[in-house]
Structure formats: C-alpha cells, structure tokens
Length: 260
Image (cartoon, rainbow, N blue to C red; front, side):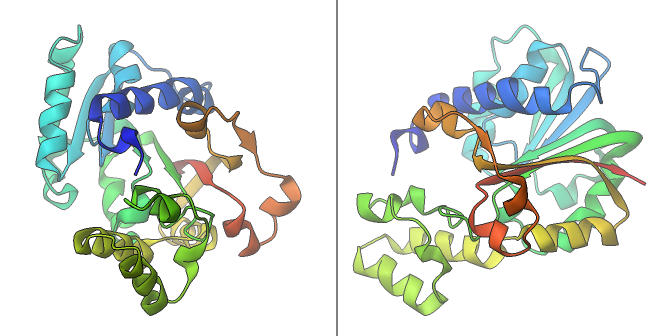
C-alpha cells in the first residue's frame, strides 16, 4: 500500500493536480467554468477533484457515501475563498434526487466501483441540464492494475500486474496466501464484480441515448504523472480500435458525454 492511500491530504492534492492539468484541458472549448457554472461530483471523496473548479469560482456539490471522506472534504475547504459556494453531502446518490440540474457532472475513478452501471447511467441523466456535459474517467478492469491491487498491504501484490484477471477462487487464494486482511480481500473481490470494459460502457452509453462528444484512451494514465513521475501517454490508435484486447493495454479512458 502506498503512503498516498493513508495520507488523505496528499491524496486530495494529487486529485486536484490531475484535474487541473489533464481533465480541465480535456473539456476546454466545450464548456466555460465561472461563477455561474454548477458542478456535481458523484463519489467526490475528499473533494480534491473539485478544488480547481472551486478556485475558478464555480458552484460545486460533492456527494459521497463515506462519512470520513465527507468530513475531510469539509475540513479541507474550510479556509477556501469560495467555500460558501461549496457543499459536500453524505448520501447515496440514489437518494439525492433534489439536487437540481448541473452544467457539468464529474466522475473520475468511480464508475468501476458502482453496481448495476446500467441503472446508474440511466438515473444520472436527471442531473444534466439540456446542454450539460458528463465527464467520466475510469480504468478498464483488465488493465495491469484494473483490480486496484495497488491498495494491497503486501508489496509484492501491490506491484504485480494482471493477476486480478484470474478466476475468483484463485484470486482470493492468492490474496489469502499473502495474508491480506479479510476486509481488503472483500473490497478487491467487489472491484472484480463491478469492473467494466470499454465495450460494455459504450453499449450502455448508446442504450441510454448519450452522445460521446470526446474520448481519449491512455497507455499511461495522466494520474501517474504525480504518482510515479511518468509522463501521460495516449494509447496507440491501432490498439484503441481492437475490441477486448485494448482493455488490457489501456490504463484509463476519458469520456465526455451529453444527452442526445
């Protein structure tokens, strides 16, 4: 397990840095961010992804089910100049129907943890204004660390790629062999249950009448720049166009959707 997973303020700053350097440039030219822009982040954690938008004066709401993370978010934004336009809500998004509509709905590294993604993608439409944009960044499950095994306490397991693709009984056995705590094993198996592929995501997008405004596939995840000092790198176009195989060789996808 890396220090960044236990030092929450460092993780907050890491999230803010990636959003500022990579997510905002990805959507520039398609939306303007100012004091009139309403932004919703689903699965906001400590709110690091929202800090660059708060810095621009936007009206932001973050929703998360983790009490400690929401508590941290409120603490981290306590001295922010735009704190009066920020709100962090401890709630299941399915119980948040009264939030209104937003210019920009934001999710990064969250979709792969959601059960029944079809239901979710249908439900979230109510939060989008008629010309609103929906950003999603998520790793295909089959990619080298798509099982989120980097959170393992074992250094060997946390740095070994691809073994999360093994059948569940074998995967569980490996985690037990290296003495991962039972709660950690259950968390990792849940990621295996909820993991999503590019093909299934785009099928859901089409089914629920979203339009893909923009998409980018990365060989080196932009978030790896601050985590590992690696320069972000887009995946080869040939790989991008090979269904199923590409899930093993792409570390994250950036999508920008709107309703048709």
